[in-house]
Image (cartoon, rainbow, N blue to C red; front, side):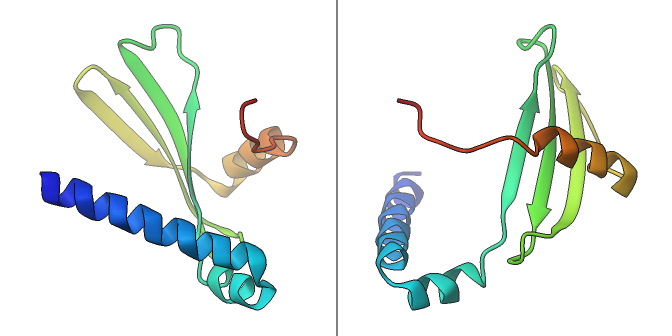
Length: 105
């Protein structure tokens, strides 16, 4: 187990160096981000978060187009998931349009 943890730490440091390089060099940034897809998990609030969990997962291609979206729900050990339709995905995207990522100060 320690080996994979060490490998993860090394890989994280390598990725941070790469991102720093991208921040300084537009050509490097374009090359890197043209290969990058995004996976985003949105945890939805529940009445009983200790026993229930539900979330939406979005996956994009390098252009930012959503290529897959799914919903998952669990109660204790029981788990179910479903693909999200394009119609429902439009509702989700609309609700997130003003969402902005930033560091907590």
